[in-house]
Length: 179
Length: 412
Image (cartoon, rainbow over all chains, first blue to last red; front, side, top):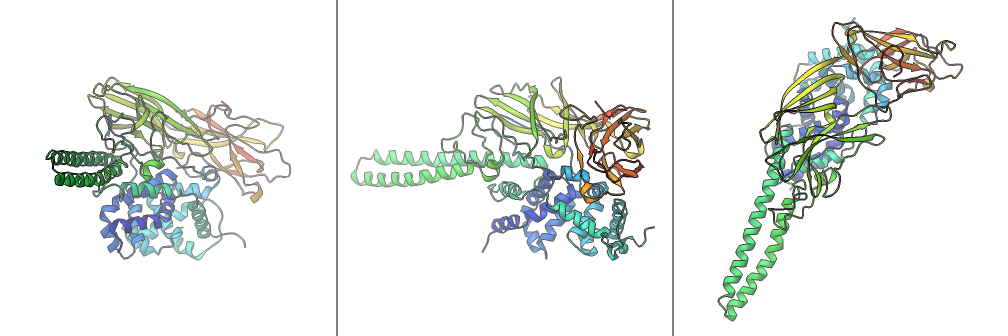
């Protein structure tokens, strides 16, 4: 019988990669993605019983990551910074190579994804990267299905301007009400 | 029709970029280091930096508490053994021997337990000369998280690693006069990383304790992940610390209040000094650059501040020729300078545009013949701005783009 800690550690080891990918697509920045995932999982640790009670643990944790992302990144810590002679308060998170830097600049659609609002981007990532149904996206974003469709359709209008694309059923479904 | 649909292209872009997400190893180590390996210190919700600070403090206290308990047990055993020996009888001597044996078993266990608890204390004891802790606790074995990315070892410079391909610059930007902590000097150090194309990453601004055993990082004001490129730091009197930096194209001022003993820095204000130029604030066009004998060889992306207030433009404009060239010619490089100009310094600067001021960025094409010629350039002047399509004819082979500079020439 695994302990709480063991089950948490097993989840972290198994799902960090997937969560980092989601976080990276949301934040578009490697160190911020790491921080988002770390903060979310550390925050969930004392609440792990709730995660285990959820029907889909990964979906529950992913929702926490998305909500934390949408809650906004504090550009400046709102807490004081103390130091004294006796302890180090810092574990330094080393910046990781952002191998996309040059690619980003050449990739208009990736750049246009950065133009989207955070909620639009979250909806796009959940719908088109994770292939979630609109209802599941709505659950993750704590909003109605109609809101999700609106977020996605507005996002697709922006993304459509990055090139010329063939017609497709999925895109048309979301864009049907857009002139 | 080989043309992709919008949703296919979107899924392709998302999947391709997801591969650039960070490897999970460091995050797993950090998460487990702050939770299951943190001796119960994080059973409460953590709130940003304050929480991390609390974890560190709780660990330090836990280490000291355990050390105290271990030392107390050892003292009790020694006193017991001495007391028993003082009785002087064979039978009690045997019993004393037994108690000492028990002690010798319990001792290393206690010490090991103490050391194990001291271990995740971020190496706090290492740079201290260990005034207060027991010998057992003074041999920290850094936890996985701390060992992977910790601050300085005694006598060694601070550990910091710029991403591969980037160069590091570090400098002391201020010395904090901390009268309450006279044993050490505390310096504010700034570390920056810059890539080959002159882009600076977010700064690391941290307080280092400078002691006989070398510098050790004791607090962090600005983390690289925040994306703030610090340009200046000023200590105003003994009560304020002010940073000026650039974040997402805007120039911002961050003010910290300092406690009377200068060991607590509390953020009190963030003020935007100059905003980033948005599409609405500027007029963007593309004009022919030098090389008049070679039409279509080069152009200048010209940004004119048409608004009533100053704004910043900096870095590289993103461009894409329209119609899109063949895949073989799609590669556009972003370099500090090229054959026809650009900037000569190792990192580019943000350009502040007063109303009516102009910044330009040079775009040059290769000299390869038989290249398709664009009829327009799609231009994004800053990451958060939408693309603008601007009529301009330029060869689409070997396009290179250089950073924005002040003025009309595209050269610094």
